Image (cartoon, rainbow over all chains, first blue to last red; front, top):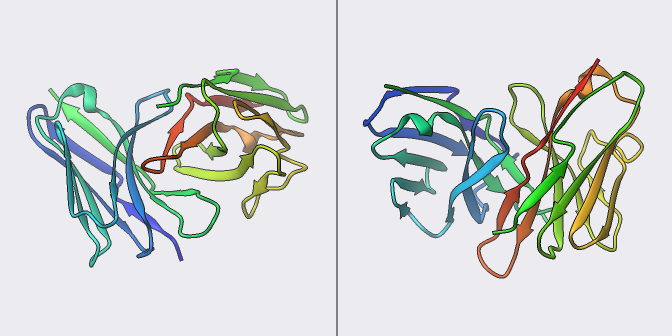
Length: 112
Length: 115
């Protein structure tokens, strides 16, 4: 079945790098996504990666995809207090409904 | 990317009443989705709303409880009917832009509290 798992909590010091991990089970997923949710706000699309890619870099964000292990990670360089939020990974369902399957979310706390 | 607005942004409702949530997009989109995010939880898809056809509901969600309208390519509504405290959640609409990477963009959400 389809299931996406994430660790629940991560705490880092301002200026350090953050790495948020995600595992998924659907090997036929075409796209994988990272969303950010700040307190009281909706979801902001941060980045995505196509399944035939291993890595994607976008400014401070680096996404790594290991298809063999079905493992996705998001690295945030030079983490700032404004990066404190919940981060969701999501995969696109292989069926025709186009729905996204979301992980449970990782709460990132950046300490000054 | 599409700009999505939702009304109301939040509401407090009494048990047994109904609330209709509106979702407006600034461009024409084929695919719109409604998600629920229960307190402290992840997002769960309620239904897919495509213009010109009936909404497609996910397992555990039924039309009588969550009727959806999709009158045109820029607008949709979700009604939460006969509410109970268990319906207290954030309800989010999203749209998928096509013609490039398949990406979904989300509205700001409607925070519903049922007393």
